[in-house]
Amino acid sequence: MLKPRPTATRELVNLDGLWRFAVDTRAGERPWTGPLGTRLEAAVPASYNDLFTDPAVRDHVGWVWYQRRVRVPRGWAGERVVLRLDAATHAGRVYIDDSLAAEHVGGYTPFEADITDLVSAGGEFRLTIGVNNELTKETIPPGTITVSPDGRREQKYLHDFYNYAGLARSVWLYSVPPVHVRDVTIVTGLEGGTGTVGYTIETSAAASVRVRALDAEGTEVAAADGASGTLRIEDVTPWRPGAAYLYELVVELLDGDAVVDAYSEPFGVRTVEVRGTEFLINGEPFYFTGFGKHEDTPVRGKGHDNAYLVHDFQLLDWVGANSFRTSHYPYAEEVLEFADRQGIVVIDETAAVGLNLLVQSGLQGAAAQRTFSPENIGDAARAAHGQHIRELVARDKNHPSVVMWSIANEPASNEEGAREYFEPLVELTRKLDPTRPVTYTAVLFATHENDLIADLFDVISVNRYYGWYVATGDLETAEAYLELDLAGWAQKFGKPIMLGEYGADTMAGQHSVWDTPWTEEYQSALLDMHHRVFDKIDAFVGEHVWNFADFQTAHGIHRVDGNKKGVFTRDRRPKAAARTLRERWKTIDGRKPARD
Ligand code: GCB
Image (tube, rainbow, N blue to C red):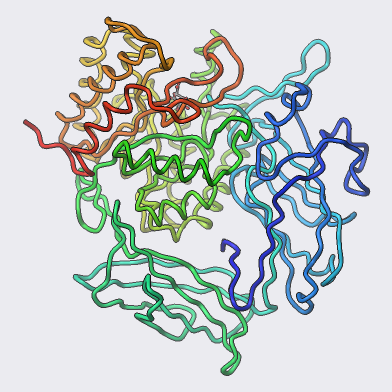
C-alpha cells in the first residue's frame, strides 16, 4: 500500500490537530450523525488514554469517537478524493457526514476510503471516526473482556505493554487522478558493481507506464517503459547498514506525452540472505546490535512523535546500535522511512504477541489451557494473523531497512497445535515476500528440545531472561544455563541464532556493590554475562537487549509504573548499562566478535 505523497499530480492535506472526542457511553446513539456533544478534545496523533484525568476515559473498553470538520480543496474537482488513516488502534470506522465510508480491523496498519462520491471539491464535511480498543480471542493481539461486579467492562490481555488506543498516527486527505498508480513493488539485487532494480507497477486502469531511477542528487541513472521490468544501475551505491544511500523510483502514467499521474518511491539497493549460519547483507556477514523497542512515551502513549523519533535514533547511534525490532507491532511508517535514511536495520514484527496462555496462567497461578485450540487461539485468530501479515508486507515491502519479518513474539511454539497454526502463516509470508528471511521469537519455555516450529524459519531468535526470571540474582548459574541453552539450539538447527530479548528490570538510581536485582550495576553485569556467552557461539548473529527504554504496562503487582528493563529511562536518560553496551557495540561495529 502506497504512502500518500504530494507529487505533480497528487495533493495531500494533513488532518492532525485537535479533534472533538467522546467515549461511546457519553456520545449518544449514532454519534456520527451530528456534532459530538462533548467538551473534550483529543490530540491526533496520540493515544487518548493518558491525555485526560478521568479514569473512565483511560480505562474505557469499547468505542471512542473522534470528530472534526474537513474542507476539500476547491481545486480537486475531477480528482479522486481519498481519506487515509495511518492507524486506528485496534479497529476503526470512518463516517463522512452520515455515511459509513470504511471499516478496518488491526491497530497498526493503515487503511483508506475513496470518498469521492461522498464529498465535493471546495465543500466541507463532518468526519467522524470511531475507534475500538477491544481485544478478544479473535483479534491480534488477543485479549479477553470481563465484567466486574459493579458492571464495568475490563480489558485483559496477554502482553506486557499498556493497551494504548486511539488515533496514534496521522490522518490524511489526498487527491489522485482518476487513472493512477495503485502500487509499486521494488526488489533489488547486486551483480558486482551493478544494481538491479526489479519493479512492478499496479495501476487503477490500463495505462502506459514510464519509470525512472534517480540517484540522491536527482540525476537519472536508469529508465524504462512498461509496468514491470528490471532497471540496471551501473556503479551503484548500495544501501548499507550505517551508510544508507537512497535512490528514487519515479513512476509516471502517460496519455500520449501527457503525464496523468506521477508517484515517487524511495528505495535502496541491497540484498539480504541467510547462508548457513550467517546473516548476510550485500553478501557480507551482519551482526545485529540493538534493542527491542516500543512506541511509548509519556502522555502520548503510542502517539507518533518526530522529536522522539530523532532523539531515539541519536541514542541508537550514540550507544552503537545498528538495528532494532519493531516489538511487538508494526511501527509508524515515518519510523521505517527514517531508518531507511539513517541506515538502521529493522526486524519488522506483526502484532502477534501473547499467543501463549502459559505465560499468563503462570503469572496468575491458573491452570494452563491449550493455546492453539478452537476455544482459544483458533481459526478466526489465525485468519486475522494472516491478514496482519498481508497488510504489513504490503506496507513495508519497499523499505531497505527492513531485512527480516518477525511474524510472532513468544507464541506457545512448544505446544501441540503450534505447527499447524504457523506452517501456513510462514508459507504466506514467503509467498508475499520471497526476498526476506522470516523469524519469530521463542519464549523461555520453548527449548531446542520441545519447540515445534523453529525449523520452519530462517533465523532462530530466542528471548531469554537468565539472571532475571530464572536464576534471579545468581549470574553464575544464569551463565551456565544460558550457555547450555544456546549451544543446544545452535547444534540442533544449524541456523543463525540471535537473542531477541535479554535484560533486567532496573530502577535508575538504584545501586549496590553486590549482584542485586533492580540496580544499575546488576543490569550491566547481566548484559556482560550474556555477551561472554554469545561470543562463544559460532552461529550467533545478534543481540537485541530488552528494552531500549522503560515503557508503560497494565497495572499489576509485577510492574512498578511499567516495565523498567529499559537501558534508557522512559524520558530517555541513560542507565549505567547504556555505557556498558556502548563500549562493546562501538568496538563490534556490526561484525561478529572474534573468538579468542
Ligand atoms: C518478554 C516479552 C516482552 C516483555 C518481557 C518482560 O518475554 O516478549 O514483551 O516485556 O518479556 O520484560 O517480561
